[in-house]
Length: 304
View 1 (cartoon, rainbow, N blue to C red):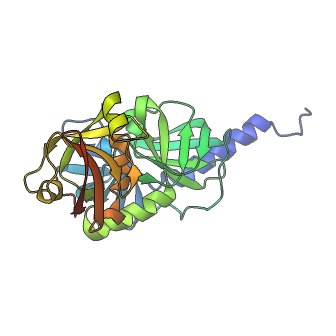
View 2 (cartoon, rainbow, N blue to C red):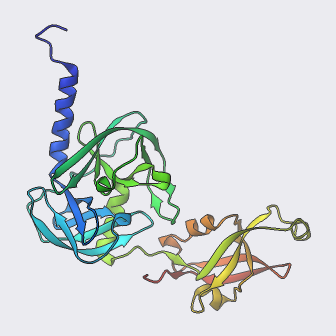
View 3 (cartoon, one colour):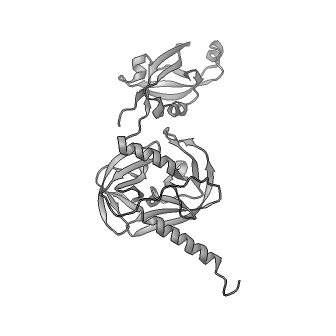
């Protein structure tokens, strides 16, 4: 390389630093009394999005802006199933994140996670390890696409933004199962944050039943001509819940949902999304060695 040719590493370094500098203006630190800081970002004027799991408390929240200003924040709503929380702050000149792009992502692309501590922005470089389709969280939330990063994240980064090498907003960085670094995609944030601002919560279906997986006895499977040995057993029931009102009892084994086989508790949660609220449901159950059906109306999960 001649003295007149630019150093490619220097060019890359400058490019990434510029991308971080541009995006960091929208990133804030989220502080709570007696806890370490996490990150968030200005999603709309006066509205900050952060990771729900990073909020250990819902009161005495403070947002630290890039210029050092600290503002009191109030919780507008949170959805633990998608790990999204929305805070309100006084209107400020802090810019909101740019609207997300719609392009597809590929494994191997360079990405930058940007958070903020009290002393300033923090940035870390990584790769997209997995880029895939929609998935459902263990709590039943619908995530529009899979974005997994090739490293773990520090607690102070959680709730910050993930951008691509061109500075485009991809989503919010969070800590996933077994410490994996994930991004909640921008399209999920756009959908969920808008509902949280409007209603304070995301409606979820509710049966009022505590469930555990169970393996059915071979003789029972043969007697009832079942194709599967798995189901979920009712271990408790809310006295005021729709399941109890419809006649579901502790000890009943649920084996089908509107005619579809039920194998796991997670499958039940998957079906209790916002669209399920108010709908009629036919549960196939086993009680006392006999097959039965129970019809009930799915309620909305009470606010916790």
